[in-house]
Length: 257
Ligand code: XMP
Image (cartoon, rainbow, N blue to C red; front, top):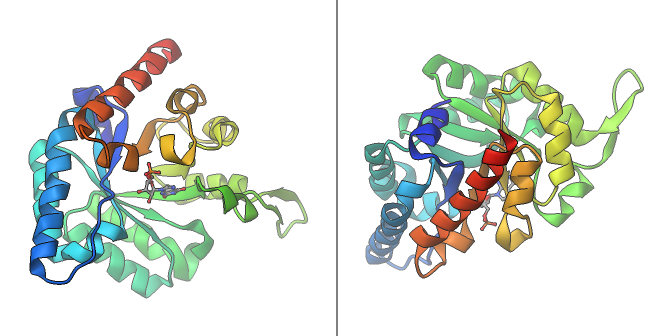
């Protein structure tokens, strides 16, 4: 995955979730939001290994509209970009969505394994493989009630029982995912999933700080990247805050060897 090079060059394992948004009354609001997003990116770019965008920014800016300015800026900095769309529909619409995200310049997208393979996510993986882009599969989300589903024990067709997230981690390997998402609020699950995955299947962990995850614990447990949003985007000095996280992560990775 492209992020590996950016991470090595920048000595960073931090992905910025560019989580800003606004109400839109007219085009001025959209321009102002785009400017705000780019200012945060400019301020933090030296300290991050990649940029993640979700719907709260995509919808007001528009995929082929102002969002292109943000994606162009990321590309100029040499930063890979992830669309956090958690893609989750039937195959023909999933494939179109993936086609647009990749055409628009994203390097990877997130997908929800609940959609399944045939008639679900297969088209997304095919499209990604054809273009050498990445797919990152949700294995266990970070918010509290994720345990209602990702943590639930499921009965497989052979009668065996296992937690849903273990099943999804196996699917990530079987389907050839480039990475998985495991919430920073569940370090024990990160350790468990790390043991199940080959080393080149990366663990991305959102949920640090505001959602309660501790960045050092997350990397001690085996995460490859932390995804951090509000605590950086809403800081007075986003760059300084990003730098603080990068230093914490580096100290753990030095010990991890
Ligand atoms: P904060 O502000 O809490 O933002 O640092 C976290 C960012 O990560 C996204 N997020 C997730 N994405 N699975 C995902 O794929 C998750 O479990 C998850 N939890 C948070 C969220 O959209 C935000 O951009």
